[in-house]
Amino acid sequence: MIELSGISKTYRRPTGEAVDALMDVSLRIDDGEFVAIVGSSGSGKSTLMNILGLLDVPSAGSYRLSGQETSGFPAAEQARCRNKRIGFVFQTFHLLPRTSALENVELPLLYSDRGSFRGLGRKALDMVGLGDRISHRPSELSGGQQQRVAIARALVNEPDLLLADEPTGNLDRRSADEVLAIFQTLNRGGRTIILVTHDAEVANHCHRIARIERGRIVSDERVAPAGTPFEGAL
Image 1: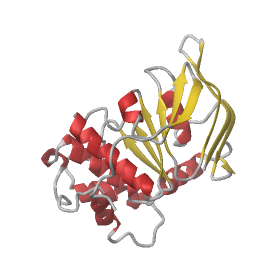
Image 2: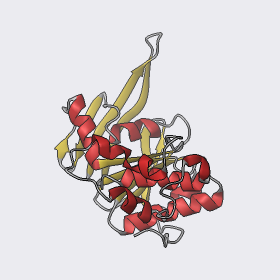
Image 3: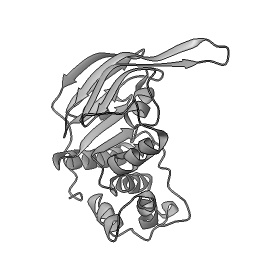
C-alpha cells in the first residue's frame, strides 16, 4: 500500500536556518499491516505522519500510495484522496461540542462524493461499541468514549488506511487498552493501520515497530502483539 523512497523534509526557521525533519526515509507497508512508528519528541514522527496523510509534501523523495505517485497531486486531489482513502485519529479528539456522536461521525460524509450515506454513521459507531450512544454529546461521554467516536468518524468513509497520531495520549490505561483493542480488531478485519507514538507499551500492541530518531528510521522489526481484540467491534 505504501512505498516511501528517500523521503526528506527540510523546514526553514524565520532566521533562514535549515532544519532537517526527515532524512532519506525509505519504508514499505503492505495492505493489512498494523505498524507503529515510535520516536521521542522532535524525532520526525509527526512530520512523517503528515506526509503519509497527504497533509504535507516531502522536500525530496517518492511517496507511492497503492502504486500511485502522490508528489504531483494538486491540492484538490490531495483533499479528495484524504477524504476517500485515509482516516485520521488524533490525540485530541476534535469533536464538535454541540453536536451528537452521530453528527460528529457523519461530518466527513458531507464532503464526500457518495450518492447516499444513509446508515454509515450508525454502522461506524456500532463498530466501536457505541451504537447506544448516538445521541450523546461529547460532554456526556468519557474520554475513552470520545476517542471511540473519533475512530468511528475516521472509519465512516470506509478508508483503505487509518492513521493514528498518539491516539491514547489523553486516556487512562483502561481506556487506552480499549482503544488499542479496537485497532487490533479492525486490523484483523483487514484494515491497514499506522500508529504514531512515543510509548513503547502502546507500540507493543502492533505487529511491527519502526523506530525513528533524528529524522531517520533506525530499526524496523516484527513483534508478537500484546492485548486482545475488542468484542464490540465488527
